[in-house]
Length: 262
Image (tube, rainbow, N blue to C red):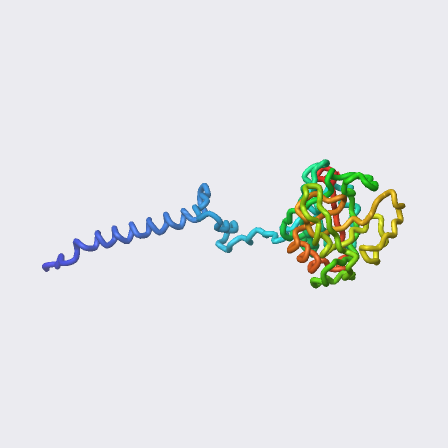
């Protein structure tokens, strides 16, 4: 009997292919989780996978609370003088103890912290700052003072503070650098240093006595040092008047930078 050999040579090849395929599958199975684990390469910022699975790990919590809790530039003693109900603060920072140049920034407190407004150039008194202001010293008083009343030679620009529109705010003459003073009191906010809050800035009541000075205002800048006040450019002065809100119990924090850091 003649036995056919057709296809006999193919069986060993088929068996060999099957054996090789089985070996590859076993190698793959042994490699998943066996031996030394390798951390797969991942793109920067990609989340690592949890051990034993491919579920992404939770993203790290990113806080959006970037507003400072404390007002920048103020030390503990100064910050402690700000009333707890105050949520609006004008910080006036002098360049130096004996400098008439300063900057002003209005801050507003929210649940996330203090938010800063625009930085404004400003002037203060001719001889700088003092912790004990007296008449004629030509220094601005360092401290924290409430802002309760406003007024001016010109009409109310839109402030919510009580506003005294009066001819009593007229002024003339020249400043320390020969600049004209006319228009300086077109808009003013009374700083409650040695005065009776709730009255016109023109009120001359002096609770600490006349010798301790008074009439310290935020007013329109005339291009030079003041006798004791803080001055801002007219457009900034009007912006401040419109922004100040009595419901926020606004205060001014003023002094040279070193004094404010106390």
